[in-house]
Structure formats: C-alpha cells, structure tokens
Length: 232
Image 1: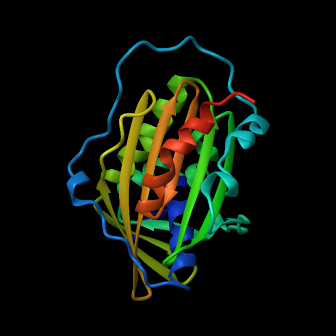
Image 2 (image 1 turned 60 degrees about the vertical axis):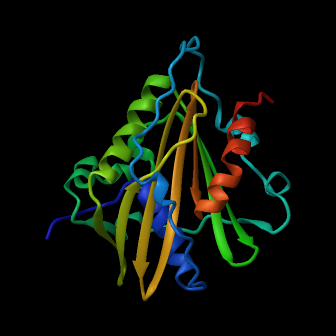
C-alpha cells in the first residue's frame, strides 16, 4: 500500500487531534448547512503588488491571549517527526510530496504560527498561521492543498503506531478578504472522534489560516483577519 507524507494543513490538524484524543472525548458537530458550499472567491480590483511582510511583522499580527479573551493559553509547538507521519489512500495528497508536511514545500516566503488551548466547557484548541508572499503564489499554493485534501472524502493518517481515520467535507467560507477556502475534517482515533474546521483567507499578500474547533474558528476568524491587516 503506497504511503506519502501528508500535507501541512492536514498534518497540523492531525497533531492537534492526536493530542485531543488523549485528553477529551468531546466532538463538536459539523455545520451541515455548509457541506455543499464551494470555495469562495471575492471579486473586485486587485491591489498593487507589495513586498512580502517579514516573519517578525507576521508574528506581531498573530492573535494572542489578550485578543482571544479569558480561558485561552498559548501552547508551545511540539517537536514533530514529520517523516513518521504518512497519509494512506489519497493519490492527490501523495502527488504533493513530502515537502508539504510542514509547509516548506509550498515555498511561501514568510510565515508565523500560534496555537492556543481553550478551557471553557470542554478542552478545545485553535491555531492561526500567517503567510506572506505574492498574491498569486499564495492563491496557487493554498488552492492546490485544499483541492487535494477535498478530492478524498476519506483517507488515513498514521503517526507511529496511531492510525487516524480522516474525513473531509467542503464548508462555507465567509465573504472576507480577496479569496476564501474552508473545510471540515473529521478525525477518528482510539475510539475518539473530533471535528476540526480550517478556514483560509487571502487578503492581498497575506494568507490567514485559522484551524481548530469549529465554534472557535468561527468566533475568531474575523478578529484574526483584522489584526493580520493591521500595520505595525
């Protein structure tokens, strides 16, 4: 059976789910009204090209605990053995190759990331990734990943001895920024089931990706986009 390293979007969600399955059996229901929506592309004039933001600038534009409110704690990024994570049963993901496992294969010039745990009524997580490059490269790169993931309604991801069953479903993207993509991923492992929402918004030469519990993604996406647009 052929295997290859999974994409950076799927990988980030899988590591989140692997952590969640060890501490919580809570799963948020998917929004069934969004299931058949296509990726949204907002029309209008394209702004003049500008130089990519630096990683330092992107870090300043990430959400922090004070932006999110009470109950959120910044998580340290765990050490990852990307070569130990493989995807099984999705040819489109196999074609992307191992370089996309941590985003390096997408060749975006600048990036920054932050992940948060939320201890509200249940244990949930939300993460934000910011990338900066030319608008064309951002659009092509993220479209390629979302199209590949959504081409396979089900597949498996392995990490060590853990096997995660993954289901993908297109989700409605809000009419924000210049282009939008969104999907729901359902993960089942060790008798636990979790739903992760991933929404990506391109605004000019910045790409904002918010992933995590669907309710948290919906609650903080607009705030993340607003801060990503703010000059420091």
